[in-house]
Image 1 (cartoon, rainbow over the protein chains, first blue to last red):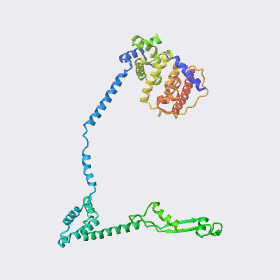
Image 2 (image 1 turned 90 degrees about the vertical axis):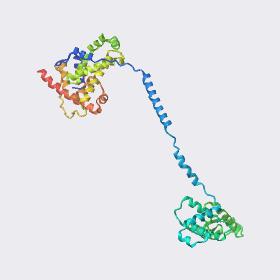
Image 3 (image 1 turned 135 degrees about the vertical axis):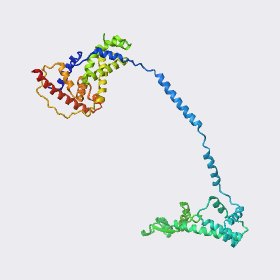
Image 4 (image 1 turned 180 degrees about the vertical axis):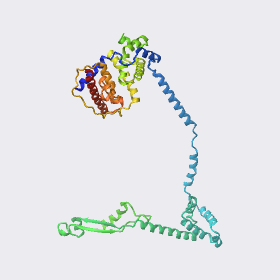
Length: 253
Length: 180
């Protein structure tokens, strides 16, 4: 039997007995009606939308009010600005003065150990020693570094101190130069110039037509030592430094 | 009294109109509930809950004709039955592995009464019966059944196929019995 026929058959049979109470059951519609009446039937009415909107607005206003209150009641954070103020004072570079040298001598004199005090060096030599010590010590506070940097300016009236300082200074410069040269060795400049037949003819005092075929083109190779920058510790990085050398090579040809 | 006027009166809260509506639909809807829920007591409770919903939500009904009214009430009742079934049954676990032999010599000229066929439908296992009721008698699609029962469409098709096979077997057996 086809499936559709079975479905149709059963559907028809079910529809036929739809309005008769099912046999073998104690179905009583009136009893069920009484039970149904005991439950109060509440017909659903359409809710007024204004109430939900009003509630939403009220909640929103409450939230905004609470946030505003929180923001107003929070104290401003002044402590941070107070903490940063002294830092600007530290960053101000100290100007070199002649008085600082005298102050430094006093200051360094205070730091000299009892053994050194016993020797009683003259003030100029003490200053030179102090400078040496300050350059060697790896850990120095900001204030002490500043003071020792200002100590470079020494009154011109003290030739001994000047010479001593210059000696120390030259020592320092020499070491830095050694380091820099080792890091970036100066390379000689290699220039290759290819001359055409007119230039070659001009150079050899020939006419261009009479020039032998082997000398139609002349290749010149020049080795020029690398230029140094003005501070004598860095090589020049731009081509502008090589321009005079190029011009010179052209003129030589 | 049936039709638009009856519904209008029900919407106005008229008790007599409500009773009229109840009388018209009580027995068919109870039968419908009994088809899904075999237990009479549970079926009756489900019917009462369902009809209560009908009366409570009758304001939402847009009456067009008696057929639309029938369909609307039936839908509420079916949903109510499915709610009860979902609580007590897991449609995924319903056995569908029993392969039934289909009798080839079944004829429609059986002496089976409608009540006997109704009883045979009630004999089907819950999963088969539910899918059979929804698909054959209520006209739901497999997609709708899958959504309602929270199963896959494939399961729905499979259960319907098994339900039909089982029903054929039952019909054949009873046909012979009734014929005797």
